[in-house]
Length: 593
Image 1 (tube, rainbow, N blue to C red):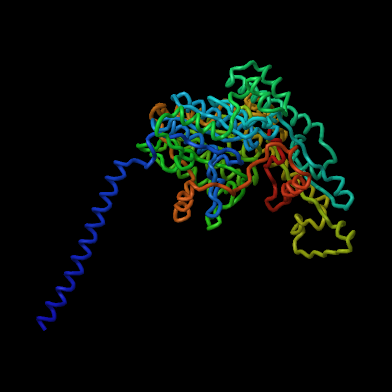
Image 2: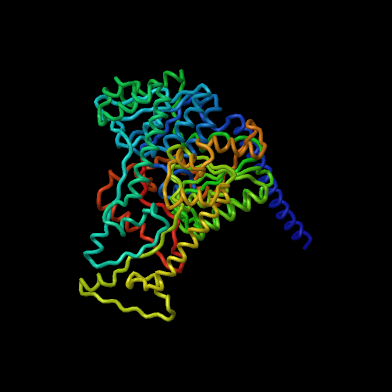
């Protein structure tokens, strides 16, 4: 028995010793890996040029991009922050930027141009290369104009010329099929539902669209003239000659070199020096060393249409857009973090649900009440509900080409009850409750229901304008004059008091640091919301893969859309209407100059 117990004890001790040795070995391995990683750094070469591909539409921020099966593309905010990191990294000598397919809006081009200017200010270079400049819009060329050199292929087209937009009107079709559109809007400039209500562009919509495009065009031409060191009238005249060829714009000094992509890359390598390696921009952003120290400024990213509830991650990725629960919680997380002194709320949204927008605004006001200043940095489009969630911010910063405003309300439906009879169909509805089927497309609103709808629209519009007046510290009559559902450029919005300053993310970050009394050289950012768990890890691991698929970005100009696509897009914007939460704060079908 004693021998048996001794034998059992020896087995137990050998197992324990084995486990102990394994633990020690694991600790030593981890220590070794730590020492190796510290010696090796982030694994990037000591002399590199970054390759940035902007030939496909991109999202403004990571909150609206990427799934497990569609690796996410670089975003505007990743370009802005990545170029800042690269600008401080002595190993990075420059960037080769491919673009020209008409993917960027003017505001996106202005944001990227400002980031390039900061990058070049640290002694780095940027070469913009394109096979051609496709598309009439100016966004791609605005971004390229900030580069040291612009390269184009021989005999390739240069088509940037201005801004254009339009709409498809279906009222005549609806009349032919006896469909009845009943849509309430506040006020005359709120044109998102004109597709269904009108047979042609209204005078108000024509006025606002022409002014918007002119203002954005002027800001783009002015920035190009500054970057290219040319007279503004010379730039405007050169653009008026489009479409033209690379040789034509070379003679007008709109580009610097005529050559192919390998030649542009060789020129970049020659600038960078011996031993240079080309690294994809997203690979660098993923692997580059993160700043040391505790974060003191939060970046909360809000991109896409605003909707109620939450967006759950799945193998197919999170639902696109701004989910009110998630964004509100992200703002509250930043508010609860004692190290965070201010919040930069980056917004790129045409709006959406009024209840979701109000929930998010409540979270913004909660942060301000807790003593954390909030500065809004506007992306390409911050309109309607997007403006609603921004309105109480301590500062609002927009690009000159940002599309903003659209302070208005939209609700209603199209009823198809008579249409069914035209094709021999019939539908019957039963309900308990007077207005249970108020939103049904199989019956029109009764006069009493239309009265309810108008009361709702009035109440929401009054609340919206009152919040703008309080947040912007403007007299209510002045707010109502510039509201009326009208969209403005960032430049015009500033002149009317809806925006405080013109500029990009770094302008907003500077405002936030000043309000929080954080010295400029000591700013450290933390980004919200953050993807966590397995899917977050998988998403980060896949960040350096080629993005051949993904979410479609915004279109540069509605004039380039086939009629069928415009039709389908118009139907998707149809308001839900009624007493069941269908009132919308959304600006749809905006031109993208």
